[in-house]
Length: 212
Image 1 (cartoon, helix red, strand yellow):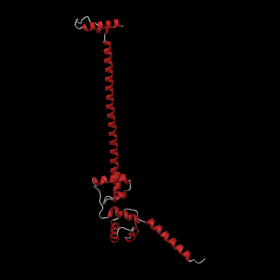
Image 2 (tube, rainbow, N blue to C red):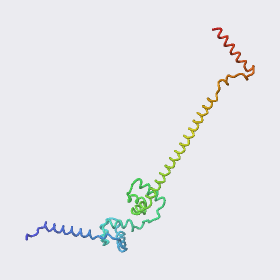
Image 3 (cartoon, one colour):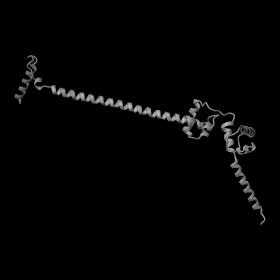
Image 4 (cartoon, rainbow, N blue to C red):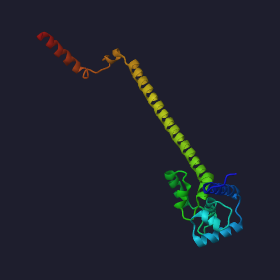
């Protein structure tokens, strides 16, 4: 068997470290946190601050990854955390921020002191999204009702205009039917004084004819 060189030894050591790291990652606890784990995590953070989460997990002796420690602290253990009873002002701010930022919950939570991104996301999915959907449905129903009322009003106006036109035509026809030319030029019942203008008119017409 050939003797092992320095390079081969280093290679073998690195391979063993890689295998150990893989095994450690696979064995990391992903289950529910215990009260003892919470206490140890809080103690280390109180001493070193909420940073370098992989180092915190190692110093606390927790079989947890850095991301799990960070989320546990931000969402459950930090002292200024607020839970439940989201006010109307907070709800209005969430709606406006979501319209601007979308589903970027960590950014939205950063503008709501004491609130976590996980709580904001859950509140949105369970409450606000349904509220917005209902308001859109009510708005659509209101618009449809307004349009229907406008259409009915316009139809009533059109019907009234058609009736007026029909009545106008009917009155005109009645006036034409009731007009009698012979009766109009019948002067038998007129007094002589009333017929004086006709005589003058006839005399003028005769004089005019003689001139021609």
